[in-house]
Image 1 (tube, rainbow, N blue to C red):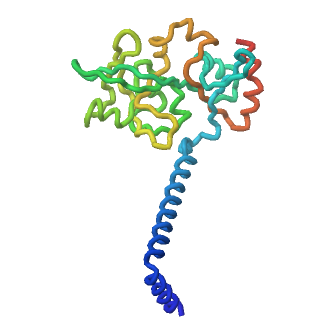
Image 2 (tube, rainbow, N blue to C red; image 1 turned 60 degrees about the vertical axis):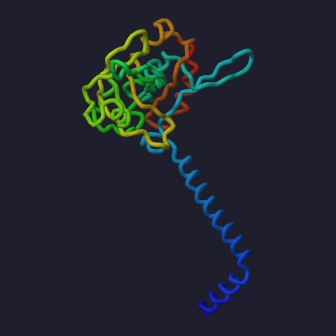
Image 3 (cartoon, helix red, strand yellow; image 1 turned 90 degrees about the vertical axis):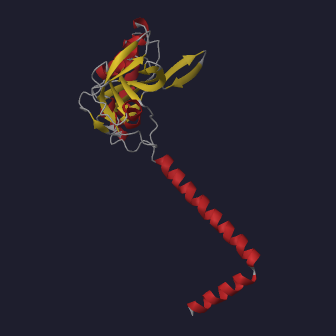
Length: 247
């Protein structure tokens, strides 16, 4: 019975080849576009979900009145990171995140622009970027230690193990020697945080004068925290106004 249905269907399709061709092309395009949309939506919905503590991780948002208008931004004062950790016992880890571009020395005749993130030592406790080499407990603990991705390591050192080797980087007026302390797996495509190199945020003194580093009126970079539990978010928010008045 089913075999006869197939025969009749094939016979009808053969008689109307143009109509059949148009329908098949339309069906193929529809299926193809639907599959592409499915993978696109799946990719977008999976952004940053590989961080195991994502539910308890928060980015600090700043509000201010400007000419009678309430404005908001994720750019925060440099001094807010240590103040938040001191004032709120709910905060387990905190990191600054400041992006920039510096000149990196390759050899006597070659330098290149190098993208970096300047972060606090807690950065890799908050975000699950896969550390392939290095001590996770203190890999970002040294001002002159750096963590680089696999791709960056290949660009600078080829097949040689880069741990302990130096890269000269210019953040201020002169080049400084930075020792490779860790290697990270290349950053996943579904990460909103992109970088080639991580530097300790103590290096801010090369870029920002001391008075600005210690001023609540100077905003520079972003601040992320992890709480013991996401349920504590409202408690921290409720204490923000008191903290600001204090400082």
